Amino acid sequence: MTPMPRVLTESVLTFAEAAAACPAIGGKRPSPKTIYGWADTGLLMSGDRVKLETARIGGRRVTSKEAIARFFETASAGVEQPAARTPAARNSAADRAMKALRAEFAKV
Image 1 (cartoon, rainbow, N blue to C red):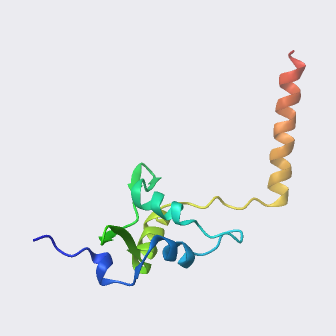
Image 2: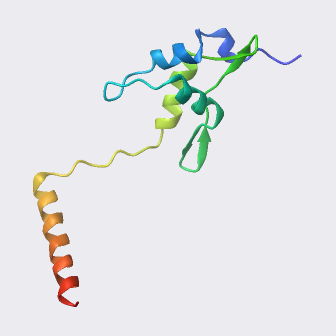
């Protein structure tokens, strides 16, 4: 006999409920289709595929609040946020880029 999926021992959600439970980014929540994509295809993170855990209840796929939290945690692990550049650093980079462009177009 196969063991019961961990999702079924947690706070079970349909994909529509899971989409509503996710945090809104830019005022928009993910759609149930996005939840399905996370479960079916997953996300490619640093060469590894991360998928949302699911189980079937009566032919319907479900997930859980806890599975969503694990998915976000795994997908976020090891992702380095780029360091914020200061205005002076941005201006310096823009100046270097402009000099490089002028030098390139001077050759033409």
